[in-house]
Structure formats: C-alpha cells, structure tokens
Image (tube, rainbow, N blue to C red; front, side):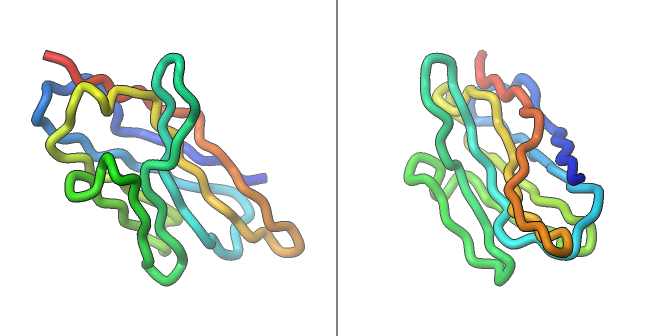
Length: 119
C-alpha cells in the first residue's frame, strides 16, 4: 500500500507565497508522474501542475509564471512553490502520484490541504 501525506497549506494574503509538499511512503519501486490538483468550492477538480520522471513539467495557464513544481526522487516527494498568490487560488490542493510497486501500477491521492488567499 502507498500513502501520500501533504503539508504546507494555510492562510496567506494576496501576493504572498506558500510551498506545498507531498511525500509518498510504502512499497515504492518507482514513481512516474507526480502532480498537484486543486478543487475550489462548487468547482471540479483541476490540474495545477505535473512533473514526469524525466523532469518535464506542465502547468495550467492560470498559474504559469507564478507556480513551480519540483520533485526529489530520493525522498519520493513533490513540491509546489506558489508565488504571487491570488484569491482565485483558494482551494483544497491534492497531490497525485502514479506509483509502481512491483507488479502493480496505480495512481494515488493525498488527503488534501487547504490553501486560502485572503486579506
């Protein structure tokens, strides 16, 4: 079994910064794609950013130039540096990883961490 644990959410003023972390634990042989999604009240969950095993990244248009995703393969951890935060970034942020555990390959979700941008 694989578990993802997120940290780093909170309340921040517009223009501020936060850094989210998500660490995977359990039986892990390799991790392909790591990503961050978010879900605001009344809206569907959407992709914020992801990073593949080769370091290639993809971002939602709304966060390009403000957010940066990175990964530490030795720690099975993905990060999301969020700068110039806006009220529209308020949401629950979820990490997602596609993990190979021997013969099993599956996607896993973290429990979510709340990010609130407000003055």
